[in-house]
Image (cartoon, rainbow, N blue to C red; front, side, top):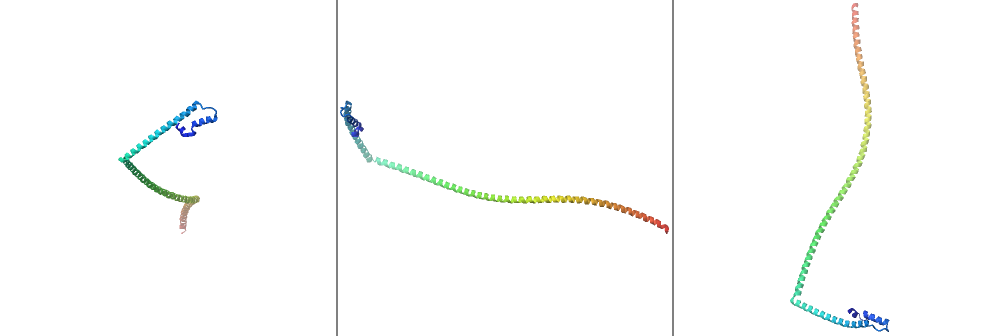
Length: 224
């Protein structure tokens, strides 16, 4: 109802009754419409009275608050509470500052640790790069050694083939020497046998010569 009164000419009741009269100008107002209009008038007065009471109570409440504030100010309670609050805020600010300093100190320590870890990682990276370069150089040396070994292997195989050829030639020559030696031994044996035969024949011829000489001597003695 208060909202209806504050709305003025735009309230629902006025708009309803206005529309009723506008749509049916020759029709008289009903009892319900008249009762609603009278009730709205009485409610307006009641609402105004209630608003006046609320305004008076609000003023009394504000006056009481003002008196309480004056009394608190005169006793110093507000100043004391303000000082306590300021002290708490200062303690809180000090605690926050200490926490901030602690956090900053931890952050600085953590940053130092991270920088040291980064330096260690950079050193390890440099060492790994150095080792990688050494491995590359070692691999290059190994490749060179492998090439040299391959060349030397080819040379060794060529030398081995040459030695095999020489061994084959030596084997052939050795066989020829053995054959010649066998032939020479056979010749030597034949010569030995011939010498023995010649010596035997010479002995027999010498014996025959001596026999003939003796016979000649016997034959020559009677002639003297």
